[in-house]
Image 1 (cartoon, rainbow, N blue to C red):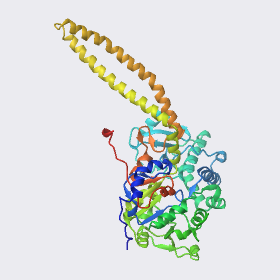
Image 2: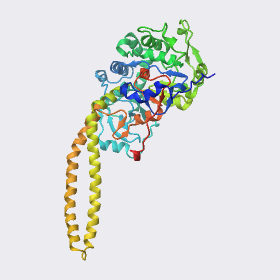
Image 3: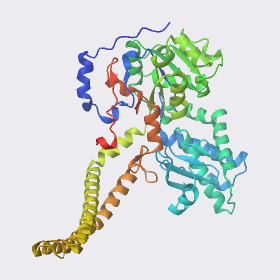
Image 4: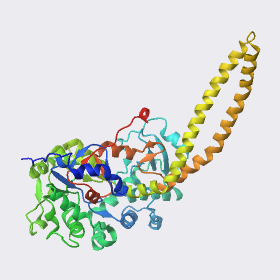
Length: 496
């Protein structure tokens, strides 16, 4: 039986007041809305674990994965020992990029899948190389040659792949197809996860690898006080999930007697994304049987089982995750759940945008001025052509009129020349500002959400797949539990 929905009260003073006061919430603590969502209609809220409830300190954990994988490549797959000297660059790969496994390239695309920039190995691709490889046909991202960088866990493996491509080519082992290299890196990092070599290092020093959010337990308890059932849905095994939950939820005052008591259901080794459409039965977790809690902890299972257990289904469920495909798209598409995507990169992107607000304003003014100059130049060109025709037809016209036309014909080229000079003066400053802003986000790829004036592929996926997005779950503490999240007005270009 489904949980009863509370009736949204739009006259609630706290809801009405916050509607006008959200500007007081720092932007990095806000929840951003793509699709309207009434929190009062949500009966159950679920969470992924890695990069959702548990925020990894990116540099240490990515360096660890990078180092363990390169060691396995050298030892198990006989790659050159030179790869052991490779150092991890945490800025080189960002989410939303696409790996061309065959060519050994990493690409950034806009919403239309146009390749705007790329690297072969760690060498930047020249524009003519990009055009030769990607302009002749539309890239089909579902093809086996391509792999999307969808999660933060992908970053170290992709950078290692690119570095290995460079090592092989410098040693005279250039290949026409680097797919096997990519597969080897993929298998070795999977093995590092599977055999516990990665997780054992992390759990032995959680303070070093996990960024503790002191408000995490508080927001979960607020959800419960708001009448929501809570569940954890993760691909991690119980031993690892239990260690992270203990670290995240059993610290400080007011901690629950046991970390799992805050959840109504815990599903581990869920095998997402197949979980959302599978029929796999739930299995008991022997290690969890003796826990001092009545909370159900299972492994495997499926979406239908979860909905039946919680008494909520479809759009009564809100699920938090960090993976555009494995968490957000499939839960929405297969089960109709509402979705909230965790984007830790938001903090940095918002900070860069705020720090460079003057540069953005200056760039906007210059771009508008150049646009107006181009319009004026086109208008002058039309006037010049019209007056030239009139001059040829004005032999019998009033002399004063002919003189007026001649004077105007003489002045227009000067005006056009002035416009062209101003445009030439502006172009270097516009380009300098574009480059400055772009590199402030990332020296190689710019903003994760944009590419030029377009949304990036990642930015558009975020808008398409996620009802809400934010940098951390605890940002919901700034909103009442019956809040109505409303999306901004969707302006068309002609409305602006």
